[in-house]
Length: 251
Image 1 (cartoon, helix red, strand yellow):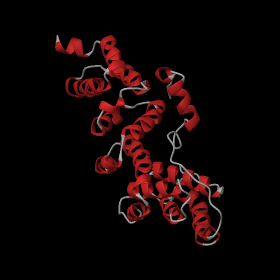
Image 2 (tube, one colour):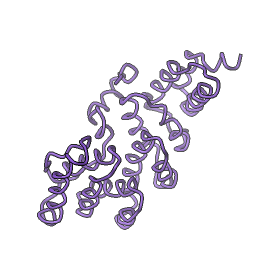
Image 3 (cartoon, rainbow, N blue to C red):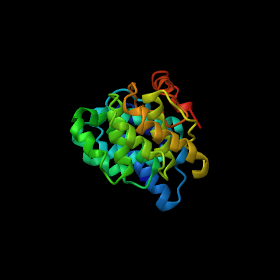
Image 4 (cartoon, rainbow, N blue to C red):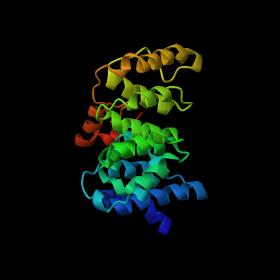
């Protein structure tokens, strides 16, 4: 009986509209039952998650730790992009330890969403804190620091982003090149998805430019906006939320 009620998707969708903090727990329980008991919950779970992320109100009761636990279940690009928006809305500087821990998780979606949230939050922490992050041994933390600096067109972001073009993680390369292009207006035909061999020349060109002309060239502000590294632009993400089309958006 308890399981039947758990998977009453109509009730759960209604819950997502009025009590997001409870709907978060519903999605996590559904995923746990699917894993442990081989129960098919994906259709119901996805519907509740979509409804939850589409809500504009009542997020103040959802803790960052709870929200991060949801991220591995965002299975479409639309859900991931909107999750970036929601995490940045509920996070504060006090959540930095939780967000940094999320950067070290195995799940790539969790890392990506945490990057965006932490970069937005840490802009308020001040430049010394961001420069400290640039020295981290963790690539995701260096990217966060560079992204936050890039949002204010700070030149210290350039060499870090140039180095991250050689990362083994395609997602890190993709976000780094997005920020570099916004900052500089340059391209050098870098393809984050290409092989190491095919990226070599454009990476060398980028790093040479950063060390030379990039020392004095004018820079523009750049933002690790939700959607930058996926199929949806930031403007399309806004349309998904404001237009109520998130539930029907699929890869």
